[in-house]
Image 1 (spheres, rainbow, N blue to C red):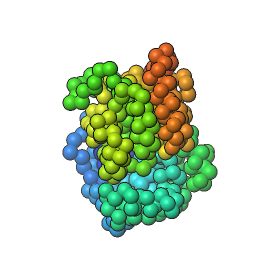
Image 2 (image 1 turned 120 degrees about the horizontal axis):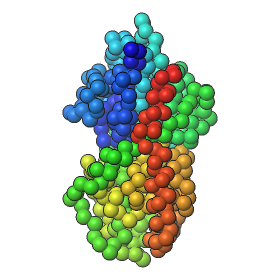
Image 3 (image 1 turned 180 degrees about the horizontal axis):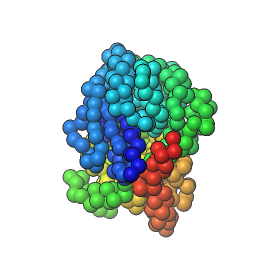
Image 4 (image 1 turned 135 degrees about the vertical axis):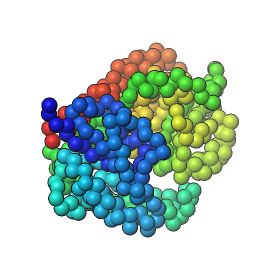
Length: 399
């Protein structure tokens, strides 16, 4: 019997983010007759959502804020290297840019073994780490939920991380990008050899989503109202401001309600904007929801208003659940999922008028909405967890 290939997954923690979801979807469908999987985290989780074959270990160094995050970078690198030495994996498979550079930096501490290194880029690094001077001041002064010093240190750490990506991504044996847009960005802006980059889209576990969407939640949608939903962190990237401005126009003409699912540092700013637009009775900030799928499934329209995305997993989830989607056609992700007018609607980033027009089209044209839903469900099949995990397994076998 052939020996199993030893793979070490590395990530920060099992938070509620999309990357955690992606890792769970991959590990749920891995072939454990072929692979021996260990998941290394910065700190141990309170729960284990993975199959029993997955071993979870920790370096016990959770992420801190402020200057502590710089010190922790070097401490974590040494701790990661020690774990790699003791586990002796064939492949070290890291996710998320901050984790990726930490793991690739740890290579310098390895003495006795030389595994292959795969880094997965889940977002648009150029967009995430590039702030104009005006944007820097906006984050520091106008969105103060985290405090001025924390926001300033966050921006400065992003500037540093951008340079680390340029320095350390090229030394990985393989970079996986979750969209063609990210691949082009890594080649053009970060000087990563295109031969080292493979595109593997993010997986959706349709069985899990379907089951979760049938659960009863505490949020009920009013009948006879056009219910619009969005989901994502309340941060600059998601540009809820533009969506609220578009909805303020739409709500004057249609009996409608907007549900914004998520938490983040822009929450205070968004509340003030909602009050300024006199939309308190029309917009609900639900906060973080453990299970957003019943709300997404029963909504009439899903909108993603992001400035940038890595992929746009929530779009595929909404398409699978039969909810018509509208998305900004940002640099990477949504345009590779949605064909405008066929299985969803694409609009220009930062244009409230275009979101309003797309909302109006779907609300008024039932045949268009029906066609979009039918085509979207077929498109969602291309991103099934079984298919995408199989793609990952082929890469792990051949590297």
